[in-house]
Image 1 (cartoon, helix red, strand yellow):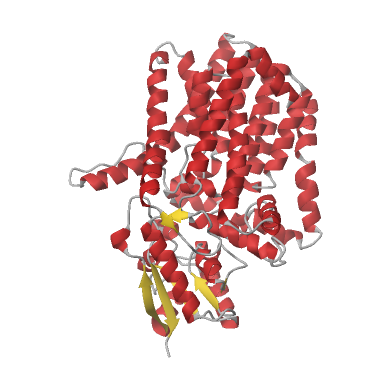
Image 2 (cartoon, helix red, strand yellow; image 1 turned 45 degrees about the vertical axis):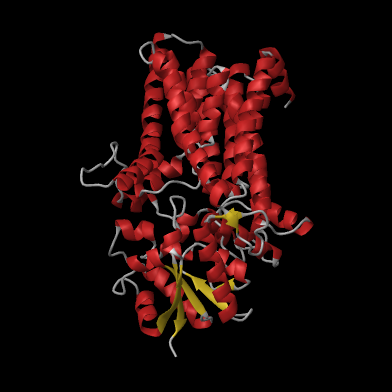
Length: 550
């Protein structure tokens, strides 16, 4: 930290003001939206925190697919203060501020202060609601710090920077082992190899220094946990694809790649065109921007290396950016983007820095740089944030359910959550269990009832009617899922089954024995979700509530 402060002084006071501007914009945005909305992914995190507070051990007693640090930190804070969703969001805001600080420092090595600020706010302009998920933000914060210290090493050749980079990467594993934690390790190997091949800096010594920073944290943390449970069980949690909760690489061949161009038809209405264009900007443009900029960066790197047009430090810094560009969004590139999904939080910091640096170095394109920066900030930061904040500030109402102090939602979501929660509370006893056929855990949390799969929050991501699966494989079957579900329901039958209507429309009895049993032995008792209250910011399906016949 003392080195960073010293670099501020050497760069002049303007550096201090610009980094404060970048951090302030990110933190203010976070504070303005932290009080609005709830998203299903954050409900998973809250359920895990309550499981810990009930005396359960992560990985051993309940499934958790990320690192343990955020869960136990929140459990501690809930013990000291009180369990509130808003406190989780304040924690995200703190790490967003730290991450934006390191993001600016990394970008400032390549870009002038104004463009560095633009890159930072673009990097934190991902989907608004899922930014409330703690693990994602902590992991990205750590990875950004890892990137910054590697770039600093390129300029200073300081072993201290290399060690700090490894330390940041190791800390990343406490929040997310895969892909970002392992990604930091891979980036460290690739970067130190790059420095050796193109910079003549010893690989052996450098990788040892990096690993000396990286390895102690995950080895001590997960090694200690392995003493309390079977190591295999812990590994199946933190590498969920081997437990069936995420596709293996061999299964991704059934998915294509996002279209490079928007699919616009003349027979579409204006709302349909706007919706398709928004999806194209959020998913397709970002996907191909990462791919194209990375390839452009690789070509430019070898071009200046062959022509000896750049000093060694700049060459190595550029190579570091090229390595990190696809690693930051590896899950998006390899899995989610091909499935037509966006990740919970998309950052793209190295891609944006690389983009504006390459344009700056191009004689032909350099003049469009300010217009591109302005356009991207308008499209990805100001427009979605402005619309979101304007709508919620005018229409949001307090949710008024347990643990929701300070949280306001749209009228649609309040109607959905309050009525569903009240129905569960009125028609079940405290010891009764319910079953939600998805990942949303808020209904069980708010009603004070345990979900049948409280110990396995991703159970229904394997279901053949889970939308990402059903959309690409309409006749999908999942015998292992059906067997696990049948075994669980034999030992503890739920009092009520909550089924998102969207999921139910995709469910086919011929593909799922569970759906066949649901049709034969259960009936719809009620439906909640007033679609007349829906708005552009609500994507949550109405809920069907099933009860057993007789």
